[in-house]
Amino acid sequence: MKKILSVALMCAAAVCAGAKDTEVSVLQWNIWQEGTSVKGGANAIVEEIARLQPDFVTLSEVRNYNGVDYTASLVEALKSKGVEYHSFRSDDTGLLSRYPITDTLTVFPLGNDHGSIYRLLAEKEGKKLAVYTAHLDYLDDAYYNVRGYDGSTWKEIPIPTTVEEVLERNVRSQRDDAIKLFIKQAKKDMAAGYTVILGGDFNEPSHRDWTATTADMFDHHGFIVPWTVTTLLEEAGFVDTYRTHYPDVLAYPGFTYPSNVPGMAPEKVTWAPKADERDRIDYIWVSPGVKIEDAVIFGPKESVVRSKVVTEQTSDRFIEPLDVWPTDHKGLLVKLRIK
Image 1 (cartoon, helix red, strand yellow):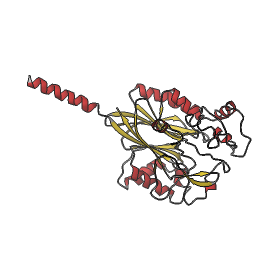
Image 2: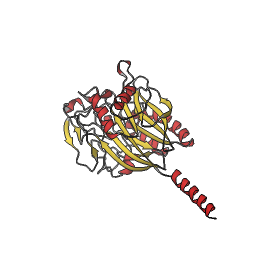
Image 3: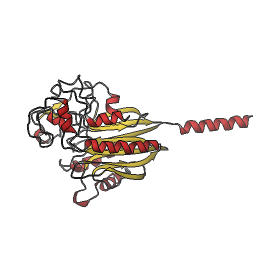
Image 4: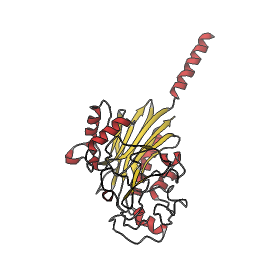
């Protein structure tokens, strides 16, 4: 009887051990032309990733200049600092993983600078993870039209008069095309038992940020806009980590663009020099059932507003840079718990 009880307890312990939650950290970071826009920027990218050591890094604006595989060179630079990552060659976006990569996929290939999406498969502590990186089309950015600038030329224009006009312009881009392909593939991954994580610079705001609460703020000019990409993701069941963790859009606006770049004139950062163009356009989304433990903005507390540097007076939490800040975007670092 004692032997049977002992075996039963061992089995129960094994089940409990197998059911242990796994913590996963993810950094989304637009690195602005691989950090080449800022003196010392390329090295700053290495230093910051080595400091934070997230499980996965989703990168935007990977260029592979002069035929050099950027993520491969980044992996080597991190290795020299005693930090091991894995990656694969990609264009426009990039992925780093602390864990061996078992498969890769091009979901939305780069074409004429209209963005890209890639995916890797990996495991941590037995949990199957499908991690996607997205840098969506930067053209037909209709949230600039609302602020009096053409979203493709960035010349001053009259402000649209209806939401329908804004959305019609917005879907001229390929952002919605790309995210629909992501949703299609992600559902296959989920059906195969994978937890899905998507990090990216969407070049489009969230419908959860352009509400009646903010209609007369941040140069929204009274508009309440159901922005296309985030609406598609939410309708498909995916979860916006930052806005879910911080539902109060006034206390936690979570602006990721345009970031102040210390040492650089603010007019070199802005695309709408007379407007308040601050928005949350860099995201990490997850499949249903993932617990969001923490979410922090990574970068300077300062933003650029009407070609001036302003310090954010919000409740947003920041991990500020060690030294050089290499990009016009702020990043997002989240900690997740996966069952």
